[in-house]
Image: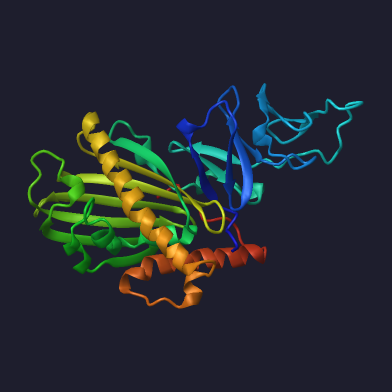
Length: 351
């Protein structure tokens, strides 16, 4: 499988990265992550150029990594600064690749392609995760044994919630509603709205919530791996501004062809200081992801094996429109990138 490299991918939640070595694989490339003493995040190829030992097995000393195998030391730019062997001469080729990083919205983002194009303004807007004045937020991480496109398909398909998540999030009646699909400057939107339906399970924990509500479920997809679900309810007939709204970023990063890093977040506009509600909603979200989404996506991957889904000619339903457009967008960008005719994704900072 080929990956789009000139794009920002989620690497790690900022509060999980500290002054210690963390190893992860992105787009099939091993990477070691850490923070310098001044807080700046660093990403280097997790491979010593001498014998290809993992640098993540080494020691972090004064913001530099000392390889466990023979003591070569590398700074945050990947330059070898010390060779404790023999006369101490440093070979010219003793250099490790460094990757551009940028920390925004509580996430450390990594650029796996040409550093020249690594413009932070290309990172999609996810302000809900860091706006503590208007939102109460939470986030988490999940490793999935499935291709990232299958995870994207799941997230951009709003109809699956009425079947996969009927116990945790969504009543089945939502599946009959017709969704609207639009594309706006490279961003793909899928929208559903149902008036007078049963209150979704997710919102039943809110004191005083009525049994019937108007319900919106919307997905913003910024390929290759950033999606936001806007999920909320309001009393029947009342404007959206009076309702209970949540913004739920989903960030998928390919680990390998068959495994995916999945970062999820959720921010709500109501009961901002209710920490008990936050804990309850987090348990509900984790239950949905771990016991409902994860098994069906990984089961799907097991059936597909090492084939590409679309080459198997699956039967398509109307709700596949969003995922189909996202797949096509990524495919075209990869082709253009290979032909050296592509520039990075258009800036989305204004959205």
